[in-house]
Image (cartoon, rainbow, N blue to C red; front, side, top):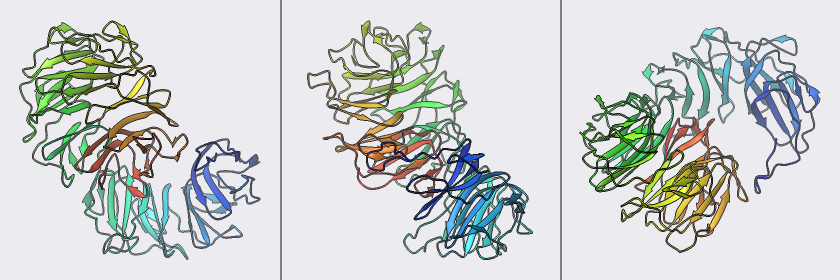
Length: 548
């Protein structure tokens, strides 16, 4: 398919394929498509074909690849293909092939690997092609999952760093500071070592020497929650590793450099879904765990912000999980799917004091789960979001305002809502944003005496996280575009005054996108299910500089 880059509307261009398209390459007139299909543009094409860039009409070129094509790259006058195949146009080619442009004739370039090729990228000067995959031989020489091949004849270069598991993606660095373009090759995959150094699933390798680059990011899976306390940034999720070190679902990073704080390692035995920091600095966490920092803590606990040690705070949440935490100076509010706190019935929302005891009088009750909680700066109002339709005995469309004491509903009753999948309150408490499962984000002024939204933004998928600066609302999620603004892959920012999309376009690429956003010290912090940010390999956690 093709989408208009300005309006985000679907274009008439519609060639179609009857199977997965895994790779695309684009030049001035032609779109090359590779994957696992038997027809493309209405014609028989086995796993590789070409389409007219303007019309989508199928090109006469029919290379007939007998296995899946996983990646394509254009360099100079050649199209390079990698995958899991043994013949191209009935000519032997073991997982790698090249075609000379513009005639698209099969080139003599035939280095061959003994396993699948998942990624192909070429240097800007067109001299070397880097390939990654699941192989032990490339061009007749031992190469473990990674190889550099000359672009002219396919001979392996002496450059031979290895990984101990498959390489699934490759990207070359841009020119930065004193470093020239293509100085570092970034790779992602399923490995624990790269170029002789410990690297968990992501690494950078010097393209001149083959030595490991200091860049060593990454968790082994999803980041879902981020908060700051003093000089530390706490990150929670479903991971067990972050920045090359073991961390079970929760970890601390230095706020200035975002390097891992190696001293504190609280750890949990199951995913963390909510984190918040009280004014005194204590970090409160909620999730699916039953132990935290080596101590028994059912679904909620607290950590010392300096040492990472678990504190005595232990509300004992049962019969469900904690998805949201909002920490005040004297009360900590919990939301989720739970049915009891401290042995007392509480339907999905509760307040606990700083000793860990349930606040008995505070009991609004929701008829479905609470996913998000936001406490006003003066700690008098609590905002809740989720798939509920009633709370505190009154109808509310997935978004509600409660008094922090005694927990009764306030007059503000938003007119638009639904299944709320993201909630954010501005730092001054004047603006509230609710994003719903029907791909709408509404901005409300809950103190302004009106129940209707001031503006609405529509995205092409769910918004799962939001964070605001004085002038912009940053959103992240599963979406691929913003209606009326254009393409935005999983992240965008909205001008608060007008509700229009700004130029900010980080483009985190991954299946599910962004799950967590936070603004800390002039940086936008992002966590989620992504492997790349723009052209850079950056798995699951990223930071963006500047002053939001």
